[in-house]
Image 1 (cartoon, one colour):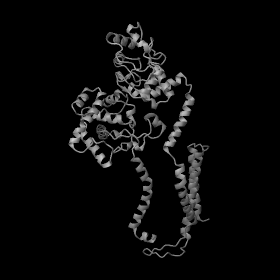
Image 2 (cartoon, chains in turn blue, green; image 1 turned 45 degrees about the vertical axis):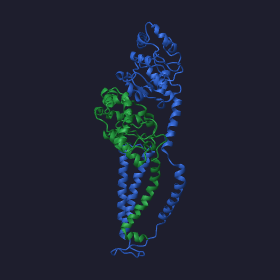
Image 3 (cartoon, helix red, strand yellow; image 1 turned 90 degrees about the vertical axis):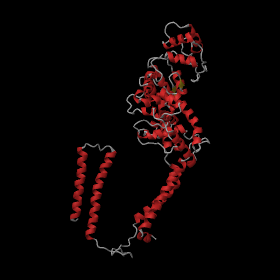
Image 4 (cartoon, chains in turn brown, purple; image 1 turned 120 degrees about the horizontal axis):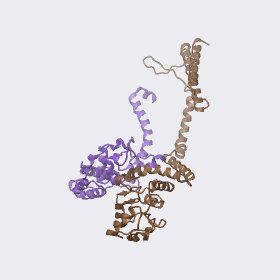
Length: 297
Length: 221
């Protein structure tokens, strides 16, 4: 063992010692395999760096030139004819064989696809979602509904659901007088209820005013006689006769499902359909949340 | 042969270029061919929508908004179906963007409406509390450059064979003949708006920028 080798070993020892000192002072948890591998890697780098440099420095000091010179000669600088190292040749051949495999089988058959990954991710999530939320209780649905509302509904209806001073439907009351009058005047055939289209102008003048005031007032107090024409479809209590017509007394799940599915054009403007952005469970959750905003059952 | 290359650096560079270019070409060309094919049912932008797209570029909406929904569940939940390359076939240039200070807009037409855009462009915080988007009130008075948009439609029809109908033809007469159709489309947008000045301007035959921009945003689905 010469002096060079001893110096190299000493340097390696210093580096390994430093690595261990860092591991100790930073309290790194070596039971975590990643930390363990990283530490072993750092030690291996220290040993290899000094081992390999010591070998070559040694070789430069002691080796003498030998071998057969190639014909070319650049300004007096020649080049030995060296055999291609066996390791290189075999790995080169190996990569060629691998390339043929990869080109013909490896890539086309097993190719990664972002869309495929998305499909799997969504499918796995949906199965899990269905399983955990099949019989979700009211608290879970309300919480879920609130987050859906904040993402999908709040930009138009406001984060508190108040409709941003008349820019969109106000969820704290069922309908305003102007909205009721607008529906009476224009009729409605857009929500896809079993009862079908509501014809325009079923009530006019004083009658329409009285109905609008009654419905907008939360259907409290004495029912105006003219409400009879509404009751034919919406029921005397205005609740829509078990889902065959829209509930005009309060928000119920049926109503939310229909509006989310079909969108709506009303006195305040247009609402797009949102059905492809929510699963049935999510729509139910949204309805549960909207009911808590003031006009629930 | 290799000795010869070693002694001729220029031809050596040419050789290196050819080898690398070959690998690049066989990777890139098939994707180019596929991307240039429009998805089924894709219609070219109407002249009004093109004018709106130009305003989108002029006011640099792309600096804060992307138009590319990646196939990740978190994105498709929020923005809708992931984007396909064929959907951009008539986008010249495409406006994918790379910065999302605001939300993605590739399918904004599915879940926002004319009157929402009107409120939002006039005063963003009136509909989205806490929004840092600036107001774009100048769009309500600036007049959109319909003639340039029409010229663009003529150009892409002639150069890239974008499938416009016979109504898109070169020349001032053809433009004047097509103008009523553009104004009719603008009137439809203005009918959904509340700003009386905008409505009056459209009636008088001037299309404010906001109308063209909303036509473009409604088209993004």
